[in-house]
Length: 449
Image (cartoon, rainbow, N blue to C red; front, side, top):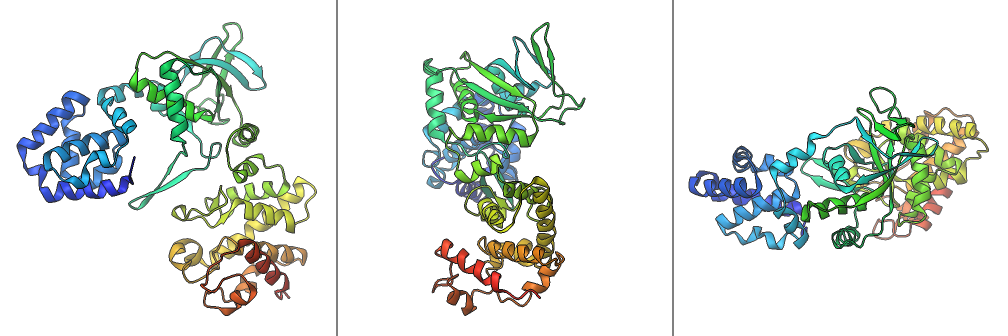
């Protein structure tokens, strides 16, 4: 879209309500006739949208949103919702290809699915050939997923009182691939899907018949895209323009755990533009990375660790992956995975007591409290880790973190933070390197006995 979707949604809702469009029967019938005849959108859905646009609008996909906007604009003449100012040419072309009946039919396939001409290429790894029409059906049937633990960093969008996670896509690349598909110039490449272990109803996700050279993906298997989501999305767009398009991708289908798939994606990431922080997280080579993985899964930081080197406030994230991993690597002496497990267990409890002691600052009122305090600042976690390391070395119980920081004034008005170089004259952290060094020194000197 050319502009923010939320802006259009707000103006479209106001236009429908203020114009009292739903009471003008002739106009409503014209809209129903047009959308039903040309796009197979049911009159019941249209009426629900006009009766309660605020409730229904967030469930529309971008193509339906365009079609409804176009009709409301044509009936009201309100230039604030002119679709040409909100939608790209690609959006409009996609919308013209929309069919309510077609979308319903696309959802009719389900696992188990058997693929022929399959070959074993490794332990729990198989190579098959899939037509893009099959890939399209897998995606639209929600059988093939974009896994945010395996793919690029997620994009967070606030929609009313919800935060929606969306794939991070480079639409320029998608469009180029789509163009090559339509022109017949795309070079065949390998996609990578993973059938997640322990996801199938039967306990076995993939069944290979060596005699028939067939691979069966069993019922309820969670199939994720490990590499190639841009090509999958481009295939869908190309098929919308030319439903008869033929093209096959070679697909490597693995049967790995999430952790092993992450390691595989890390190998691929070295040849693709993932952020350095995300590659570091996926590889988990250092023992400190293993500790952070444990914190992500078991501690109060679950869902609050950013995958990038910046905090996403919409998702209420507290700390970045690299701040945790790098600081743990510097502060804690670990030689074996057993050492890492001990550190992970200790820090899990430390953060449980820390975050549990300040629910307003860390959970309930995060955004507002950040205006007045740095207790929940990303950089302050360097200090908490330094303090935790000193506590562990001195044999202190994890709960002691509460007593050690309860007398610290974390308010931005505290001149101490400016004197130390943590905050600048405006009460902000401008130089993170300088701030982290100062925070580390402060917590190194903090009295713990």
